[in-house]
Length: 115
Ligand code: 5GP
Image (cartoon, rainbow, N blue to C red):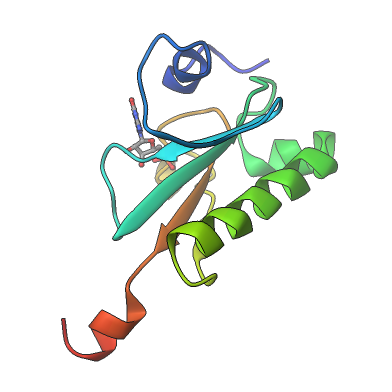
């Protein structure tokens, strides 16, 4: 099992977040330090997996559920297209060792108009 992380505290309700989706197995909320106009995090409620490699090997159906939630959120918060980022390992930028997907949605129309 992974070490206790800040996401375990969020799942336990000990740290408040702005939730955008919740089921028995998956939680999604706004990132505290957004890197895009919409920046959401999708996490499984289990603390068993530190990164997506472990999750894919251990529970591929749960990984598929997370991707489905990401798509649903991209429809709700944008126009259905999105970047899905998993950082794997500290040198790749991972700071929280509880698997999570970053859902990043930029306003592409505004960018194409030069801001
Ligand atoms: P990583 O760098 O591990 O891929 O992503 C961890 C993400 O969690 C970061 O984007 C960071 O801003 C976010 N984060 C860390 N602590 C909190 C918190 O307490 N609340 C929220 N909403 N996001 C957090």
